[in-house]
Length: 163
Image (cartoon, rainbow, N blue to C red):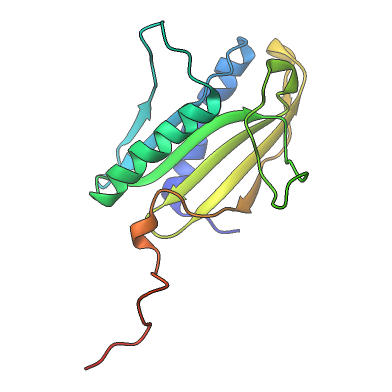
């Protein structure tokens, strides 16, 4: 599957950071964007210590924030990285939910989107702990668009144009 060069850059620059944090026992989600000038920016979600956010809430926060930035054309590419137990096929559709505990973590998932229309999951399964973690080769799987919605053709607009 061919991937936009900016998504490839997100993978190569952010995934090693996620893996480094993972090797030290840290499983918090990571996020990054690339703006129109091609600059990569990391994003963190911090709280005042009195609020505890779930991984799912953190992912939703980033998706909402990035969708607003995409709508105003501030960003061109996004990546949200988190740990999952893997593919869940128990529901009516396949999903990649965040792991509920560190013991359930078996796969790094990246939600990758680009303004060109590319929208994929990157799945990187792993085994082991600490410095002995072994990562498998990542796999790209098409995913529904969530951030660059304004770039998608509307079902209500005709594909033809009157001249």
